[in-house]
Image (cartoon, rainbow, N blue to C red; front, top):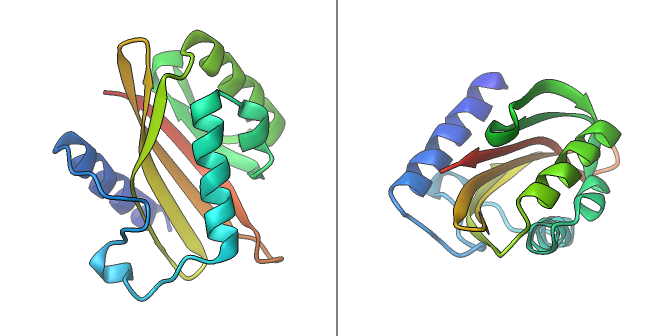
Length: 151
């Protein structure tokens, strides 16, 4: 699974660095057989509204019990952090870097795995956002990886 996560991150970063953007509904060719479920759409809406409003609390409602959190400007690099701790870290990030805009760049996934990439803009700075979600045993999508990279 680690290899697929790295592959998705590399592809996403390459798209971001080349300025390739696509609407949220766009999916990569290798995942074109997927259709977005209601759960996918609602999680994607929460992600978008949370980044646009700077609400760590709303986003944390979809955090897995433990998740991988990386924020390069805050020197945060946790392979595993509890959801409540991640919420506090993200809340601090939003206070230091209040949102001006957020837009999706790309999304895709496989049967029980989804990801979205986006651009978060704040005070003249841009952050690449990468979110990886997995379905739990109750078929709910939960965020288990969140990366913010200044770029």
